[in-house]
Length: 429
Image (tube, rainbow, N blue to C red; front, side, top):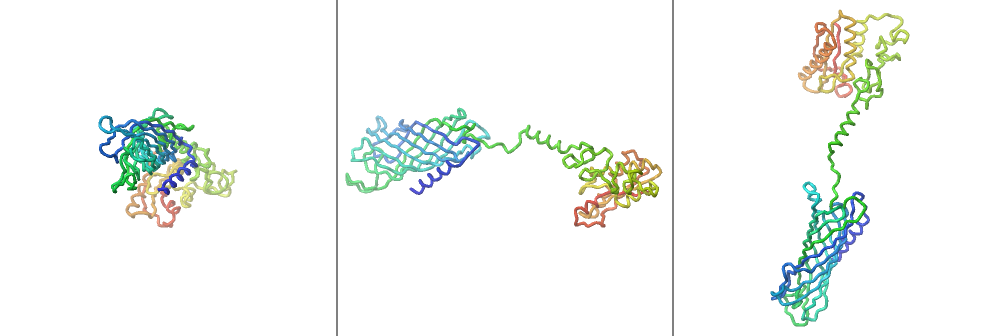
């Protein structure tokens, strides 16, 4: 048992060095109330059910909001049941060290109350018993005691709580009965010799008292509740607002501001996935300023080659042939990606300038998934672009669409290549 006491003391010293910032850890506890000596009592000695005569004071340190350690000093007396027992009086003092569990936090009392708490304790100590009225030649005896109990709490304020405690004490060895009239043993007795039978004793305590919480924090560990892991309505609204701000597209190019490296491009500019204006032919003029965006030329001729005049129809055909004018889609989707809308606008503007031309929209899919499914998906993609061109003002009689299924010309093991396959292209009729 000495080892147990040393371990508890060691735990206490460790806990004192443990720093908590969120709550107060110390409390002073005082209690008064009743006791009841259960056994051993020698007939005809009896004690009342509620014998007034107990006092205790304790200092408690909470390692965290669920577990702690407490030192206790207790004192009191057992006496006879008036009118039903011969007179006797026995005094006791008790020093103990117990571990404390904040059952209110462990059992989530906060889900239904913030005013009531519940503690449990278990530990050991030493009891000194003095038999005042014993007829035997007795000196005060000492016994190891095992202590266990529960304490209910009601919070008056952040600094004070009312407590109600029930505690059982188990004396591991007690030489005499609580009344002091006999040796506590089943062995033969030759008075005045003590047979040292090492019998036990059991007594109960019930008290009311106050807990005084010490420290500068707002709450003591008994009542501390960790911040709710779930967002409040206001916090959720703030988070949604932040996301909305991130998804803003200030320049309307289809790329949200948080991804857009060029957030002030003109409305008609063609941009890449990073929001940067495209210069498809690399001649130094952005596509929206370049009259021949797919053929390099100087700025003096608005980006068109100086040595030749290019037929508009041939120009578009070359752009299609070189895969500059395509509309791209996400995986298993028939909705054009935002940055591809500019390609549809380009084709629409071209058809409006050339009213005699007709166009077929050709849809494709990557090789992931069943072939029949991909054929239908490619047709849906072609129809989606076809419908957008009609909405832009192109006569439906000038347009047709068709799904061509899987594009097997790309490496199906490459994500980037598969993205190139998920597209629609155009063919002039």
